[in-house]
Length: 460
Image (cartoon, rainbow, N blue to C red):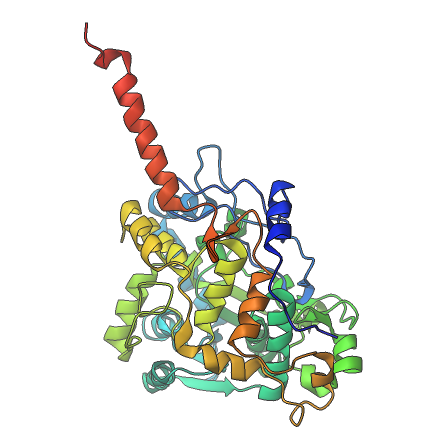
């Protein structure tokens, strides 16, 4: 039985802080990158099929100079990579996989019609002569502008397979991922990773292109040694229902306790590794071959596909053009902020600092203004989406003390995921213990003090 969340005990929370306890195996010594504004709490991508409540997080690496892997990757993009040679590698890859039969697809490009998937598919088709099939795992809840961009994508010259999963199943899996992992986007991410390889296997298409490697944003820089996505993200050697987890619950338990069956899981489960190898399926990142720049991708999508922005900035950040197609996106970044103390602004500003579109000082000011803003505009949509009325879920709802989610339920639940080394509560308000704008202010005062106490400045 999943109990209704109650307000947390602040005294115990502070006691855990004094004892040095952290959640998710995070490093208790919070530091910020000296180049961008990301902290060392930023988690690396998980193999979601293995993700449970007790999973210890691997986090972004900082070098001896206090610079994060993502900033070092950005520097190498500017100074070490021969992009002309990389483009020639792309041309040869396209020649290798280009179909000799007219009308057949050469590759698959998964996406939703956002700026990055639009850029990936469009440039492959119109510059490099490929015939891509675009495939889409439907967002949980389309925004109006997200749906328009999806239509604009297809209308710009692409065939598309739009797969919409059984919403009852997806809602249940999302509720479980929120309860157990505070991860409202997990069920969608299963589809993002598995749909393209599954269709590639069925349609005998051997090449898949995703946009950017997550090492661009903080995953291990070692991942950049290959242009390929590791098949561990979408395949397993053995499909063991006791060892595969959706929403932090094993497949076998989802069957026995929540009323799901084999058909309900079909599109969420990974492929078998032997099938991927037998079909010679390769998943490549376009960012390995072409220099990746999210803001440039936005301008490209506007020019070639009439891409439209959100009519307002997204809660928690200052932008209007990234991650705008799903109402769940607001909460995806908000929940990351609760767990790791890093708001949506910090993520976006760090990308733009690395790309030279923002200064670090501007990024810090924006983070101070917008980070961790509660995403109220779609909050009721989320609560309705993850509520499990007994008439719709006669078996699954019995596993919840309170199947219906409202604002109070959600707020009490998310306080359970606040790590004591990141959060404190003062005057009935949650505050970050470590704020980059305060850290920088102290560092600047220290620098000033050093100048005034320097021997060379003392009067003789």
